[in-house]
Each structure stands twice: as C-alpha cells, then as structure tokens.
Amino acid sequence: MNSLYIHIPFCAKKCFYCDFYSIGYKKNLAAKLISTLSRQIGAANMYFDTIYIGGGTPSILEPQLLEKLLKSIKNISGKPKEFTIEANPESITNQKLSLFLKYGINRLSIGIQSFNDRKLARLGRIHSTQKAIDSIYMAWQNGFTNISVDLIFGIWEETLNEWKTELKMAISLPIKHISCYSLSYEKRTKLFTLLKNKKIKPQDDEIIAEMYEYAGDYLEKNKFIHYEISNFAKAGFECLHNINYWQNNSYVGLGPSAVSYQRGVRAKNMADVLKYIKMVENKLPAIVYKEKISPEKQARETAAIKIRTLEGIDFTWFKKRTGFDFVNLEGKNVTLLSRQGLLQYKKTNKKISGVALTKKGFLFCDSISAQFL
Image 1 (cartoon, rainbow, N blue to C red):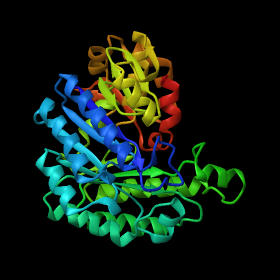
Image 2 (cartoon, rainbow, N blue to C red):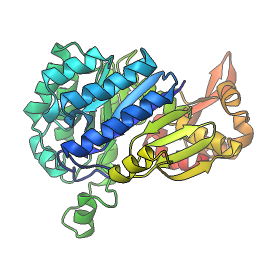
Image 3 (tube, rainbow, N blue to C red):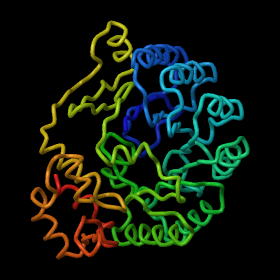
C-alpha cells in the first residue's frame, strides 16, 4: 500500500502545545504554496491508496485554493480507498465541506482537542465547545459518515470527572473515530516555557494513567475498538492511512517539513515555506536530510511501530514484510517484557504465532517500542 501526505502549514494561531511546523496564514504565500504543490502532485505519476492532507490547518485555505489543490490530486489518483483532510471547527463551512465531498474526500479529521471551554483556553485553541459540536453536526449533515476527532487529556489541574464528561459528549455525537492523546510538553512550545518557568505544574502520572485506562474501558464499552495505543474506532472505520504507517510501508510526503519513506530511504523536507517553494520551483531537492535505512534497522523500526497496534506482530507477517525472523531479532526483549506482564504471546491452532501488548503494556508502550529499536 502506498500513501500520500500533504502538509499545509498555515494556522490562524499557534496552539500552546503544538511543535509541528506551522506559520500564520498569508493568502499570497498560501497561493504560491498551493501552486507549487499542485505542480508536484501533477508530476507524481503514481496511484495512492490513501491520501492525508494535514497541517497546520488545511481548512483555513480559501475555497478556490482548496479546489485547486484537490483538483490536482483527483487528476492523478482517481479514487483512493481513504482520503482524509484535517479541519478545525472555526474554519469549517458548508461551502468547504461541499468541496471536500466533490473531490472525493471521504474522511474528515476535526481538531476538537476538548469539549471543555476552560481547557480549550489553556491549550490556546480559538474555538468554543459549542463551535466544536456545531462543526461535527455540520459535517454530518453535509454527508460525512466518517468523522474523526482528536482529544487531549492530562493537562494541569484537569480532573478525571472532567475527562469523563468529555468522553460522554464525544460518544453522543456522530463520530466514528477518536484519537486520545496525553498532553506532552514539547520544546519550542509555549507550554514548555510555562513549565520551565514553573507557571504550571504537570499532571501526576497516576492521574494520567487513570484517565487513559478509563478512556480505553469506556470507549470499548461503547463499541469503539482500541486498535492502536491512542486510537479508537467503530468497526470498519480504522484509519487506513495510519495503519500504513504502523506497518512501516512506503509513503510520499509533500509540503514543508513533510517526511517521505520510499524503498528504504527516509527523507525530510525543509521546514520553511519560502525556501521550499524556491527549491521546488528551481527543480532542486527541498530536503534537509536523507537516510538510507539498513534492512535490519527497517525490521526493528517495523517491530517498534507495529507493536503499538491491538493486533500486535504476527511472526509470519513480519518475516514476509521484513525478511527477518522476529524471534531471532527481538527474542530477548520479548522474553523480558512478557515476564514483566507487558507482552503476551498469541496462538493460532495452539501454536505461538505472534506477540501483542497486554493491557498493562499499553500504558508503557513508548518504552517497549524503544527497546525494540
């Protein structure tokens, strides 16, 4: 499976927690970038199974710019299995939703982050809870049947009961996919500066773990499958684009700061709109680094990413995908982690056929992934 990611780096305002590459919206600059991206897409000459337009805030673009971008994608890729665009509540309109549907977008990922006005303000979001709810219903009424939302939990002074209220709100809405992320304090963000200056105190790890476990139990009881560490979906609505990443398959990244992974080579584009445009227009590579990944490193990376999923790692699949025997490659780690109750063996016809995280293992997934690397 092959995927295309397009990064639109413009935002109305930088959120306090965000360390993705983004800048303030400038219509003229956006127009230049869309022209550049459209030409790149036109020259791609390949079919993509999944397409994901992210950011930034892609929905901040004017309708004419959105249409230009979407038309260029339709010309090369026909009808992908899944076509996602990210949107923020304050920039969703009926006109834009109609454009999305017209050009084959069949999945909408809305950056809600919270259904709590006080929490939204603390995160630096510029929409209200009511606006978030209205945007979800607007998308649904326009014909979107595959709506995903992002939610953040574990911010300072947040209570478990507040988090429970947000999850209750989420399942009451016409949503098919929910991503739940614990707040992280990344360098180069406003929240990191506040933390460093002791203006805020991070949430206790025990409370964060309690919130995470509650989300898993509650969403599963309400028929959302916990198919990856941070992701929950109604049956049949798992994100195919992300699954392609988690299987360590190939993907093309266009736009400033986007990453590509093709035939064992990983490359990252420069995180600067003007420089990116200039390099592409001069037919020069707009990348800041390129790395050829060795076969063994590819295999270890595949293990580290795939273990994050509910299904875990099937030994036969792993050998076919990487050429390596999983037990020979990661056997010592598996033995240790299973003794700690973090991994469990899977059986097919009474024979061990793979490994997967235990419920306890989901809480420590980042450290487990790091050990596989």
